Length: 161
Image (cartoon, rainbow, N blue to C red; front, side, top):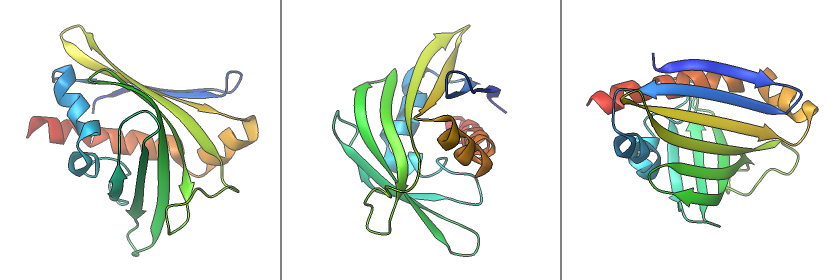
């Protein structure tokens, strides 16, 4: 498994996942840039994602839903803040209703993803920043840490193909 660490920092309201891959930066970037590839790893294995919108430009929108084992759908959205292909992407990530509109009563995070060359491999750092300790704990209680670990764990198979 490529995930090397998952750290929760309550004082700074951050959650950071670090993964190392035996693939070049550009190849790892494509797992974010291509919505069909993103669908194959975004979400835990039992909750595959389907991306409806995928505009990775500043101000762009990304909408998706994950389908659970019982056929239940969980919708989400991103608002892209910045992008610097093939090394970084920053976006606000939140829950959505079935129309893809942000669910205002649910927490959101700002996620910053960065890819760097590290010891002949590609290191991916994903840092989520929360608005409050309560929102952070709510998402952690919902399984965010484990779900993200499982999701990123699927990237190795895609990079080997």
